[in-house]
Image (cartoon, rainbow, N blue to C red):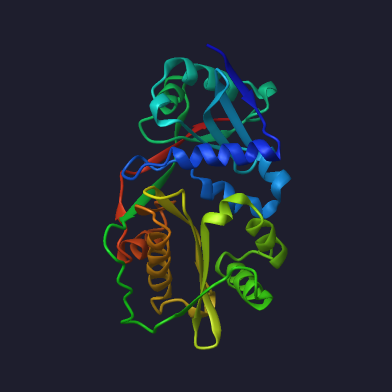
Length: 294
């Protein structure tokens, strides 16, 4: 049995996305999703490829990781290999050796599905519990009823055909996340990625003002979709817009054939957890990153 670590080229990146999509299962512990790579694609296809690591078992993709910054690896495996001893041992060897090109020396973190053997082996190796996250999931078997008891939003899809909508989306992101990095060019780079072919970007208007934005990513018919990101403009908070646009996004995922909608947020963000619960999402068991000290 041969296990090979690699950084894919842009073509290999598409292959990694396809495998990630095929591994998604509703009611499984939340894991790396093709939408995570799709959102990262806003930095460009080459940057996305450079941030991905794949592990191949006898030539077949067995695990995919995304370096979300220099010190965090978000990683998952094929479901049937989640408890494979050889794969977990090989991956840990790659993670702890900086010369392997996955994680640098010093303080780093790994996000793996709860219950995966990789997570247990990291704990055995002395990695401590890191930041707690709360995954939430909404079943999409039934139609999504949008609650308009608060001030209603006018929802439009942002598909790139109207540059003004792209600019409005970027403006909402800059305000919602207090960042200057959300610019039109990044939206177009993201939209050029293969994951966006199965995504919906929605913008909610309060009157004439762009007030909230969200993207949902499908992994295919009968599989869970992902919410990443959702934000409300600072001037339009407290009006129920986060719940309204999240419900609209869940409805869009159902139209795309998703079995459920998933999202994950830091457990300390009690307001975000409450918002998703109000939109019909049910909390799943809390997940903890694994962290190695400096």
